[in-house]
Amino acid sequence: MADEDKDSKTEQATAKRRRDFREKGQVAQSREVHTAALMTFFLLLWYFYAPYFWGQLELLTRGVFGMVGSFEVTPVSVQGLFLFLLSRLGLLIAPLLALVLVVGFFSSFMQIGWLFTTKPMEPDLAKLDPIKGAKKFISKRSFIEVLKSLAKVLIIGFFAYQTVRNEFEQALYLIDMPPISTLVFTGQLAFSVLLKTCGILIVLALLDYLFVRWEMEEKMKMTKQEQKEEYKETEGDPLIKGKIRQIQMQMARKRMMAEIPKADVVITNPTHLSIAIAYRRDEMDAPQIVAKGADTLAMKIREIAKEHKVPLVENVPVARALYKFEVGDAVPEELYTAVAEILAYVYSLKGKTKQ
Image 1 (cartoon, rainbow, N blue to C red):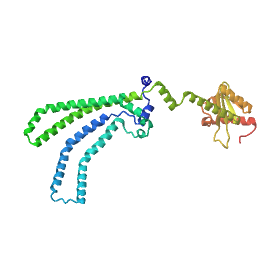
Image 2: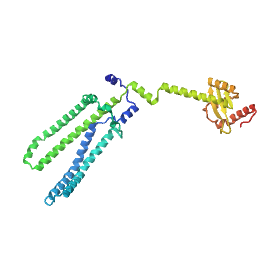
Image 3: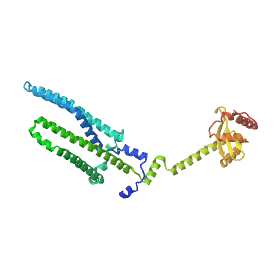
Image 4: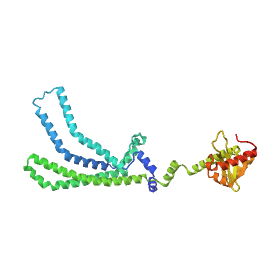
């Protein structure tokens, strides 16, 4: 079933699915990038920082041994010496520790951008399942990680061996050379090995990052059914939305029909338009459209108007002009005069003036 489900995931991940994965902390992040970046920048820093580091460490060591003869051993003096050495060594190591923090942050930021989520830290009882935990050790993912680690060790080991092998003959001459020359040679050889190691790690990190990105894209893929379900969650079921719109239209129509008996006049186009107008001087700044309709709805408006003795006035230009506006809109200024004449005519028929 799992293989069938995987095979059916043929659709690319939607923006929402990508956001959901990101909120859960499931992002394409390669640990090899961290390793390569840290190793490379550490080596570069050490190349420039090493002379200062060893120089300061030599001065510190000379100072300690220089005061051995006059140093009075007491609990206070020993504590003071310990704090002094700790502070000086801390200052020497501080740039290296700062490098680890800075490189660690930027190597993550360059891969996934700014991301802060507590989802991975939330308690999950499923993680305590020993059966599922055991499956992780024999999963395809674990097998791939073992292969990657093994390949990295073999590649780096091969190049390191080749580098040392090429310098083996020269190393034989160190027997007759002073110790400082041995240290210099060893340091240069180690630096050469580390430099090649950094190059290898950078290449492996690039390949691993591309693989992790591809793997995450495959993991985020969706089935057609999952896309449909997501659409329903975000946009709503089309059938339900259509039903809601239908109910809303019916309610709006009922409210509109209830306003027709309160109208002062229904202006009609003899073929298919009806617009009900109401004007209450103490409540409205201008006459308002309280109902409108075309064809069958227009006929229904006229029926209700006749039942409640609301006058019908035929005026084709005015009816067509008013029909462009929505129910509840005030009559526009350019139609004030025409509508006022119609209302005046209606009031004269009723033998009254509008209050």
